[in-house]
Image 1 (tube, rainbow, N blue to C red):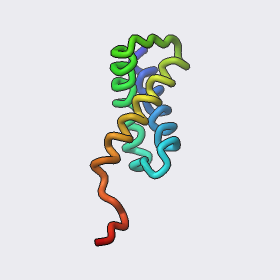
Image 2 (cartoon, one colour):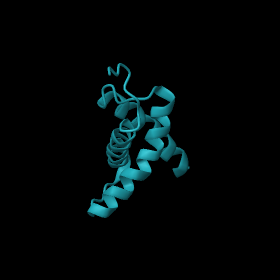
Image 3 (cartoon, helix red, strand yellow):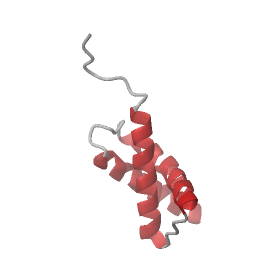
Image 4 (cartoon, rainbow, N blue to C red):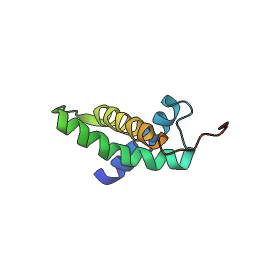
Length: 85
């Protein structure tokens, strides 16, 4: 049952991260996948920093921060839309 919660929290955090990163989102489907991966990334980063969160709200905050971080990293690999020479 915990696995389902991780997926649901990841989906919500991906959606929120897409809204936070104005112009940094990649579309609803990719943002949802990024949210799931961002939850893992956020947990890893928080673990390195010694930050411990608890409950659903703590997991959501961790996932949103991880997803925003992942969207920021992915934005470096995105081609600009209106590149002028």
